[in-house]
Image (cartoon, rainbow, N blue to C red; front, side, top):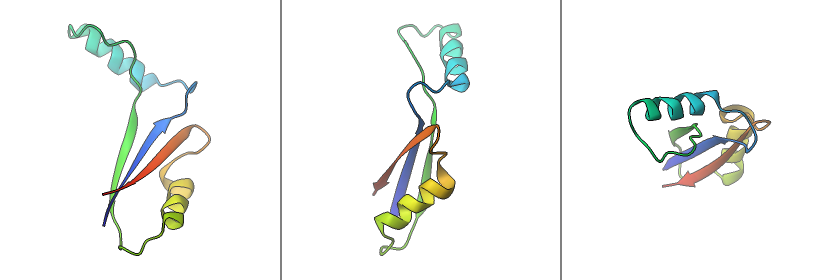
Amino acid sequence: MKVRVVVTLKPGVLDPQGKAVHKALGGLGFSGVEDVRTGKLIEMEVADETSDAALDEMCRKLLANTVIENYKVERA
């Protein structure tokens, strides 16, 4: 089964990469972009019997830094 983990920075955490993307978009002539926040998408193929608890543990222990990041698990 395919699983997607979407990891984003928590509100209030500075996002220098997002600021750089925002500035670059403006420099390329794209207007109307008010803010940019970056994150990461992790796609995994896991056994069908992999539990939600196991996926949550993977996220907490390795895939996300829970001090500054939120994560969401999506089963395909």
